[in-house]
Image 1: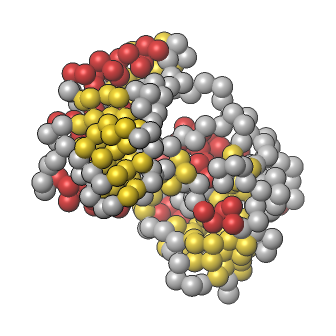
Image 2: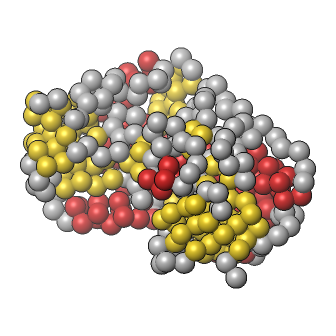
Length: 358
């Protein structure tokens, strides 16, 4: 039987939080399943520490089967490749089709890629994490100069984690480094990158790749054969093709209840969703979890829904690759080993909270 009362698509931070709450408390009635392309969920906040050699891969993962068992939720390990929103019908990569009375999407997004001519430059996107780690492991066998595309938190953390592991490293930012963050955090990050001899190119958007050259406009700005993509989020193609109301980028428009504006029986959270004030960041996805858990319980029990209100400010903690971290809060910034220990405490705490057995 392929019909469910509720189908959770994707094992993002919000769905992990939902499952944890259901494991610790009574879950809603009905047949519920989690669909995930892998049997484990990676925690993105610990990836820089993993690359810097401070964590093992197992430290950064949550095994889904024990968590689903504890929450009394069926786990289906397969990729979603299509959706018919009106019928809430999900097409899987193996050809199967699942249907549900209610759907919740926490499927994330892809990493944006510049247009490429030729195959001289090898591209490696930071997501999906398992594929990224396999690719990076093969690159490490023969270190070569590396460019990183993306001047946000992910690009900075990756540059600091990898600078000592490659002969030369360049970081390209379409805007200022860490645009939107506190000025003090930006200056601290620039100082650390300078100490690691990372070439930072701000206000240098990459328009394309020609052979082994990165182009900004028509101008070559870097030459090499390895490019790591940590740039902005790009929507998966199938939500916009499903009939769901999406924004101009292909992200699902949602209301404060986290329901689709066009199909209220479908919820969407995290990077795949579009809600004014909610940034595409794991911090916001984690904060959506309690509201999503309450509202999924409400629709299955016929109870009133809650509203999610994005926080106006979020704490930034950026790993510096040496056990330390940079901290930014509003216009205030700090850095050092104490911040690194705090970040480790928060990150490892997230993993511990979701490692439940049932």
